Amino acid sequence: MKTTVRMLLIGACCAGVASTAACSSSSSSPSPSPTDVADAGVLPEEETPDSGADAALADEDSGLTGKCADTFGDKLTEGFGRIDGTVYAVQKPSDTQCTMPNDDHVVVQVLMSGAVYRLVTNVLSNGADPNVRFAVVPHALPAPAFAEGWHAGAGLDYPTTLGAHNDDFTPFPMDELVSKVAAELSVGAKVSLYAESGKGRPESAHKIHRTSAANQDGAIVVDPTGAPKFLLFHFDGQAF
Image (cartoon, rainbow, N blue to C red):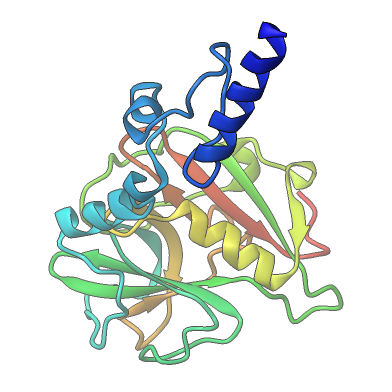
């Protein structure tokens, strides 16, 4: 009888507090507080840092914003060479608001000696197969050593200099290739590009791909003073 009365009293107690709290046994554990979660190495949702903050700080540190330039330099001499400088902006085909837009090239804008230059990179072929072949090849930067400026006559050959051949490349449609190239480039970072500047175009250089001219293959070199990576391009039908 005493047991029955005791059980009834406990039930009444729980019923009386049901509107404010649930009854619990001594074996249950409380939910972790935000402090508990943080101490465990995971920040509560409202304290999660902005994933883009580091990238923004990097751009601020370099003094560059990634916005396309409106005016360009005039120091590239006619012919093939290598420009050493800093990534000023990466202009995609979709960036039609930029000065001198291009609908089938990525334009790497390079800051060199106080002026910006346009390095125009094919991401779409006008041949039977529109997909450009792409490869990333780690390799030391050939002489001359990196030095800000335009190095006229500095040569590059994919198979001879880098040991790169057709089998190292993968074809990509334009939009995918644009994303891959852009992902390799950081505003404010050092960069080198092998390219050809045309007659009367001292602000731009192009042919950043495998060519038929001896020792004149175009390329983008990421991190040229650290762990260089060559971004290489060729078209369908080019065998080497």
